[in-house]
Image (cartoon, helix red, strand yellow):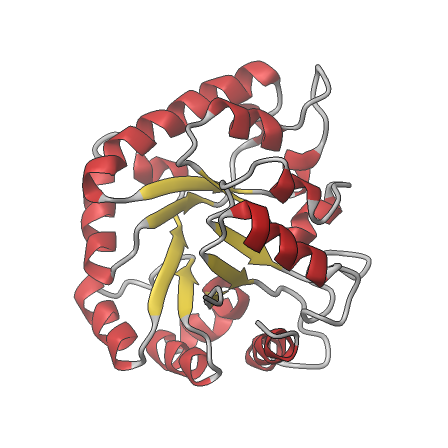
Length: 251
């Protein structure tokens, strides 16, 4: 079965800020099967669920800051995401101090494992989205990406980002292969001298290798498009071009 394609709504964040629900409708009209959230613009979960249902969209996940997944904050986070049908709560970024040494990565992985355990009764998972710095070798030779993956449970999502990986000097595919079954959600972002500098299919990412790794090894259930450069086109035009190019590649 084909892996569905979602859009990380950070790609069209200014449009969402102006007209959140209208932008969601435009994304659905492009043919995306789902969305991944990066904030909710003050709307209620019930209203958002209605808009998703009206437009036939599923929720691939959300980017949830670490502080919303710990302590007393977790209960409200779970309730909101249960309502909108979101089960993948992925930490989008970590402060450098929490991932700059092997010891810091071990402590952060322990925090992630504790969150994973608290989410299990709700049928939810957490995970981590990589950035450039997460791919750099730390003391001992391993990257934060590898140390966090090695220190977390097998159901913890390692959300690789193809262009962020290349920004950090990583191979665009190998970090998926290194952690089989952990890439339940994978970010597709083009690289052309810098991350997000071209629409998908018009840069240097070897997409056939990425798809093979995700589909053969990664355990990927969602492809998530993210785009961050808009020279010569609007954000909505760019993400439309991304999904069209993916369809042309058979996705």
